[in-house]
Image 1: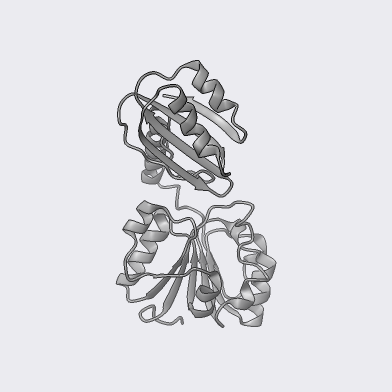
Image 2: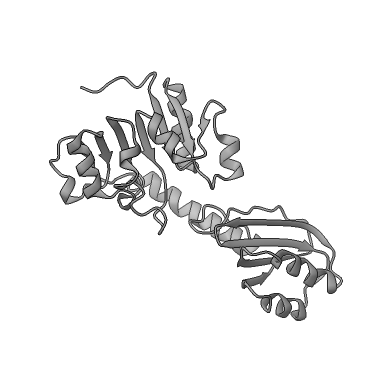
Length: 257
């Protein structure tokens, strides 16, 4: 028999669209919620309940929370996010929930923590063979994206986001690129994907300015080593501007819309 949720502390690691909903719902169920996401988007931050505590480092979340839920994509940095180094930091008897990706958890390290009592339970929908039948593990079928409604919604979302990128250059819900959304201000739009290094932004704006193009709107966002810049300019962008932008050291891709 498990304990009641009300009054417990929940740590939400990853505050994207799903993580924010989980955090907000948990506050209504009477949990004290702690959130961690160094890459939280502006939109997610606006939607997050003010009662959610913001953790600037994982150690604070690990040491305080009775339950931890993962809402991360799998990248080279998040593979085995829960491992033999992080598990000794968690609160004794913590319950870990993972309905994101199985690769986020190092299963051998988790099993050792379960058998040693550091972790009280692990609930997931990635029933790896080594977890099946293990006391303290609740392994469910991975069916979250298999309902008729979710399949339709995923198809519509993917089509809408691809269309917005092709027509406007906006990026939404990307795994490895920053979220960038800039309303059109008329004229032409310059979209530049580039390395996140000093001096490149001034090189981009300088190329537009030297060509006599007035910059009417601009946004620059980064995620890790990659940055994305969009400029709305007056007039048409000539081939000389495109060539100059592509010649900038660190430039990855240029699109003119």
